[in-house]
Amino acid sequence: MECLLRPAVEYSLAARSPDRELLPMARALGLTVTAWSPLARGLLVGKRPPSRLPASRRQALNAVTEIAAETGLTPARVALAWVLRQGLLPVLDTRTRAPVARHDFLYDRRTALAPPKPEPGDHDR
Image (tube, rainbow, N blue to C red; front, side, top):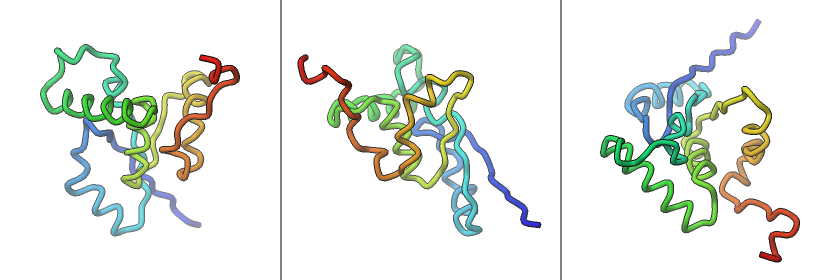
């Protein structure tokens, strides 16, 4: 019988403490790490006023919003793509189906940074 071990850590652009020891160890052992709170509890999508954030978290928010503006992606998509690029598996809020449907692009890592497909009628705007 195989044992499946998948460590779960809080990990995002705003919470990177696993970078020092846990992630290198997991890579060396061939373990997949799941990242809970990859949007830093909403911080990386602007759910908190930037003026109330510590400088390091404000810097992460600024980087995500700047890249989102340059690429035409949402801040959430940029932050989640970054977590994927680090080799972690992001765990999203699954209390409702809506958040999962918004991030269905995560099922295919090749499309993680692709621009979102336009909704019908978007070309008229």
